[in-house]
Image (cartoon, rainbow, N blue to C red; front, side, top):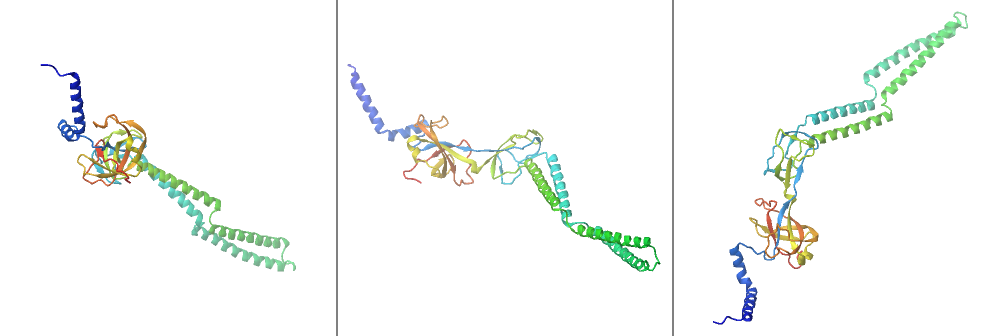
Length: 340
């Protein structure tokens, strides 16, 4: 039997290839399904990424408490851990005492002397007034007797001197009484007020250091990991707990270069993932200005070597029963023409 010519075989192969390309829409999906290969149907592929918050103490110390565990959830304000606060609490107590002392001094400067001290000065003034009255009577008597020769000049001079001394003492006591009713000098009051401000700042600093040793969750979050157990020594600045708030979860997906012009900050996209309801929404928050080749983490038969752009999107309201765990593959619907 004569073998068919090579030209005929080539023509038959070309025809079969052409027919296969034309009819691939009918046979390709079932075949890929049997092989376990899923076509992306033009959807953009990506994954979930989380931006964790690392909570660390500013100073070294022993870990006394850690009420949270890996995989648990915390509410805003929940205690995360406690580093030995003995020294920090003593600093707070010292700062509180110093502030109370400066406030008392400032108030004392504003009120003048105590009433009891002023009573002593007033009593001395009344005594001086009585003595002056007696001295003035004696001076008057000496003034009348001197011209008649019934007294000496020396006695008259002593009486006059006594009156002058008592008048000066009375003036001095009156001045002391007025000064005792006054507050301190304005410069001294201002210095005391400035010292109060300084001690208030010292107290705020001491309280902040104490709070840093007993941090609380800044928002509702998942406890992604814990790094130390109770009783261990924690170096300064070393994280003890890592948190993953729901607000820090985002999608990272890759768009071919022919579609990148449709990507805009704030645009809504629809996405889905394994176990997720269909057409969940997310808002684009970042569009990469540079192209790259499809990363190896994205498994796609049709987009394995495409030039793509990275886009990040923040999911909208996620149902409570859905957990968008970092690393979870997602599929994003293609941009619609003229979409917002």
